[in-house]
Each structure stands twice: as structure tokens, then as C-alpha cells.
Length: 283
Image 1 (cartoon, one colour):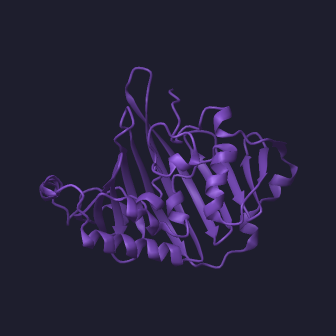
Image 2 (cartoon, one colour):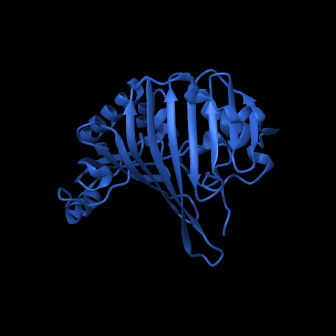
């Protein structure tokens, strides 16, 4: 999950609307089971450094389900805020179509407000491909998805806003929480009934929406309090499929063999991509 001064992959871990930090802090909106006034009272009445056991149970059930899946696919729509030159907040959206097979295969097809691209990882190499220019960058990669997420940032400033959803042990994040309380339920987010949870840690506050029946993340909204602009970030999750049989061809593309190769650009050699923790691009 993102915070200011994040120019390395290690630092970005507290920004990702991914889950190693907060499981997948999901965005919520009000529904038939949600009383805004009650939620506000609940938030203001919570003493600092309080962890509601009900929240711990909800989050652990969700990340246990994710970590147990041998394969998964989902859609993650990432919306992030950036200030224009006049200070007006602008919002950009990226849609990620994600497919993975544990422990060492990942494909991400990205479209949205920016240059569409594709990412492939097979346990040995990682490849970033830009169809509009027919360019690819290839690098050796570690043998697991967990290690590859760090390597992708260090090698090419590649950042996945859903990264904490796909790591092997998303529950490891709970050691960092200083506050967690139950907000209520919604029937709006994700088209299903969700539990609404509020969590906080140093420099970050988040709301999460987790399916009541399937225990899968539906949305996440995060605010990084130590960012100068205190920008907001949101990721919506949909189209979940767990433990489906996947063909090996899913994780490669025949177009890559004829594409022109270029080198990866490490984070310190160029401005971070828009939407990454260190990005300061303005329209």
C-alpha cells in the first residue's frame, strides 16, 4: 500500500491495496445493512490500539481462503488520485485481468488510463510486453511469485496494486495493525452482501469490503496519512475463479517471440510509472 517517499519495492508494501499489509483493504459503500450514523459513532468511539476479534476472524478467513487456492483469476480495477497543476484532484483508472498458478506462474493484462501492457512470469523469467509498440523487456526472475513481486519492482519499477492478494501468506500483515473495528454490512459493493471493516496502522487507514458468504475481497479504499496530499486509492475486485484448471499456454504469448527487445528500467533511473507509490506525474 502506498505512502510518500516510496521509491523501492520494500517501501511500496505499505501502499498496496494488496494484502500483505491489510489483506486487501476493500472499498465499501452504504447498503441496506449499513447505518452511516452508527458507523461514524463506532469509528469515533473506538479507543486507539484496539483490535476487534470479529475483524481478525473476518480477515483471517479471507486470507486463508486466498492462500489455500492453487490457482486463481480475477479482475482488479485500480483507481488512484493525482493532483493537477492547479491542485485539483484527478482520478485515473486501470483494469488488471489477473491469472496465477502457485507457486510460480502469473499473467497480468492491463488496460486503462495509460499505455496498455502485458506481464508474464513462469518461475524463471519475467516479461513485460507493450502491444502498441511491440516492445518487450525480459529479465531473470526468482522461483516464486512472492519473491518475484519484489524483483519486478527493483528491476523495472513494475508495481501490482493487487499484490497482497496473491502472496502466499497474506495474513502476515496483521502484526502491523494498531486499530481494527467492524463497521457493518453492505449489499452494494460487488453485487453481494459484504462485511465492512476498518483498519489502521502507522501512516495508513483503510476500509475493506469482504464477501459474507465467499470471504473474497470485493473492494478496498485506502488513505495514506503521511503523504503530503493524503491521496486516496481504491481497488475493486470481481470475476473471482479459484482452483480452476489452467492451460500452460495461458502464461505465454506467441507474439512475444517476434517483438523487439529493450531493457528494463530500474526505479532510480526513471520516474516511477503513474499509479506507483513514487509517482508524481501530473497531467
